[in-house]
Image (cartoon, rainbow, N blue to C red):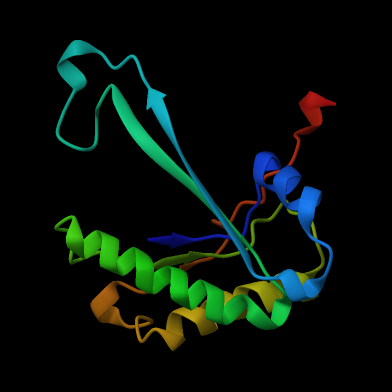
Amino acid sequence: MALKPMNCPAHVLIFRQGIKSYRDLPIRMAEFGCCHRNEPHGALHGLMRVRQFTQDDAHIFCRADQLVEEVSRFIDLLDTVYRDLGFPNYAIKLALRPEKRFGSDEMWDWSEQSLRDAVAATGRATADYGWEELPGEGAFYAPSSSST
């Protein structure tokens, strides 16, 4: 399991169309899409190397004061799904701010601490869950300089 703050254009556009008040939050969106890859014949293997899979994409738009609760709820939901699919053992890793990033250090401090607090609230910030922080491994998805 990996936690990372991010957003995607499609859900941002949907969100922008209808919200009128902070009281409408949280808003939870999800979609499923089929992905295809042309894997070499001898490379196919179990769940890790397949030619087609269905990928989910979900986003939660919430107020700052709702963040820890919403992330905690998501972690609990994902744990249920993993266990139902036969994956009771997994590691939780928190990817921390990369060297090149948008936003202030204060924003990153608050965001990273909120994610720590959410994992702690679920009782999963322990060695039993492989809890680990990964400095510099975080990503913020934005247009690259080559696309402008």
